[in-house]
Length: 429
Image: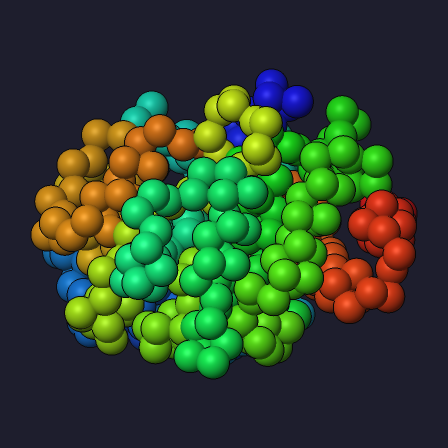
């Protein structure tokens, strides 16, 4: 199973998390007319700009223009708005030249012919990718290029643990459950565990899956297809997850909790343990500057002593097949992956570099960030859902059925997984 998981990681890289961007419409002549003196203008549809210091990404594009004479027009919107615009532009065949990609969208857009072959473009422009640690392939072709990596770990409010007299951090499922029970105090609105489970963004299922991944479990069978029903550790993970609810340690309202809601509950001091992207650390530090925070990897099965795995996301980019400027778009991606540029991007994004030669000069010397760095250095990223077609829809199906199991609508986890397996298998028909 370990070899199989590593193979998936090598193929799918550190895909996490995020969403395919799109242009706002318009034909290629309009794009060309946007520049003066016949200069090439490429559009970059993304949500990255909204999650860094104002003006920073524009400064990167300006520096690229000074170096190459290629102008980059930013089409910046929040994540959710980018998703909606992408769907409309993809249907119209008007994706922006460079698009931000979420892992759950890559398979479908690649197989539908909407993304260009990055490997061929890299070869065309002479881009040596020997220092690039990850690329995302579909059926052997590179369609998405991670730019910044974000491990997804478990944020811990140490103040809550200290108040309960807890001095050690949990590593196993039983230790985690015991600590969640100790710190839960409904009268004070404090709970051991809280995560988003809203189907509006069903990638939350990766947090639940991370309990299994870090226990050596793969949800991909030898045939490369989903392996849920009959998967012993996966079933045990589901039963363990239900035990958190059965013991009353979960934050009320988790079924409809969004990612933003979850972080807000954490900074308000209501959750001791919160699975989350480390990209939110800055927000936590700004909103709760007095909170003593650290990070751990997701606890593993009690009898597991193998390799450590974590959920991994990234900011990734692709090039639209409909682009009139694929070569210039590839040059822009190459620029973002340059050792110095990539290092600076990571500092501003709060993530980790894809260029192995990059040396980010992080200014965060907090215990929390040091813990993240330590885990990242010794842990392998996993993003197995993104090897499935219609990944987002499948995760939503899993989310809906998991809630039914938690509410008692299924007698056993195995019964629930047999239903989910049928839904996953149907995606291949």
